[in-house]
Amino acid sequence: MQDLSSDILPCFSRKQHRESFEVFLDLLLDGSGRDLPERATVKSPSSISRFLNHMAWNTRRLCRVLRQHARQTLQDAWCQRPHQRPRLELLVDLTSLEKTGKFAELADWVHTFNSVHGVHLVVLYLCCGELRLPWAFQVWRGKGTPSPAHLALKLLRTIPAALLAGKRRPRLHADGGFESTEFIQGVLTRGLDIVVGVRCTRKLEDGRQLRDLMVRGSLVKPTGLDQTMCISWVWLYRNKEPEQRFVMSNLDLGGKYLARVGKRRWRIEAFFKTVKGRFGLERFAQHSKQGVLRWWCLSGMAFLLCHLQDLDLPAKVTGTWPDWGELARTVRFSFVPEVRRQALQLELDALNAFQHALLPLKT
Image 1: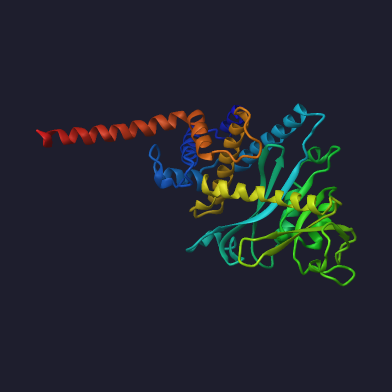
Image 2: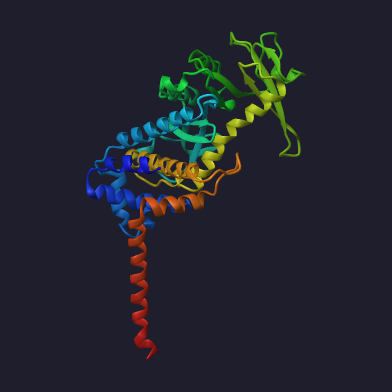
């Protein structure tokens, strides 16, 4: 984590930019998800707004630093386990950031999708062993523009070839929103394996639908695909009526194992829940696209810093989700200690002034 922090700070060449960045990062690392500029004390809310919307610092450079560090972290993990190299898994999904009100400059970003009005992001998330690395995102711009599946294929092109090489082929996980023939063929063409959710009504070449299958692990050829696919399913009992969910892969993994592998895509849902609830991804209230993009990048950076801090901790039970509030507090104290000191000193000065003003009343 210290290497990442030392690489981030040079992205802000001016002292004013660096100070505003540290104050905003302090807000993000509060870990409560309430990182609004109005809660800043060391700097005024208007200065934080200018930092996000108007100040001339290089957002692309910051994103490159974060991505390069994520890549290096992944490659270092592989070097440490050359004979048991964990598989790289690529998770793509669409998440909606609900918004109300009018955003004039964001008009072509705000749409209604699946009954949610707001901004909709297609996100690429890398998982490898214990590593959880947010990689890239694209904004869906509404009907008549590239679909989420098309945007996901575009995101896949940002992954360096070195990360996709090796004996264990990377595997892509996606939900039913990415089951289009174009998307599946695009993934397979890139030399990736795929595990994707599918509708029960998807047709097969023999005229049947998926829900007509009786044996999990059946090898069938869906209409429009030249590839034989393995089909499995699980039953969900969240409602009164059980719900059957299908999953499809180009790999012959067997019915039970494919159903278990299909559940791995839920790791990206855990990421969405954390980055929204802890690091304020959906709390952006900026009036410009630049301000919104910067907010999202810094929110993802806060998650990455905390995740790297978690990896540095002593060994823990595998598969357990960490205490992100405690991690954020640790990173906050080690990364922006001066901001914390200034904020506490201002609060102490206000307390002393209040107590001093009460003295004449007590006498």
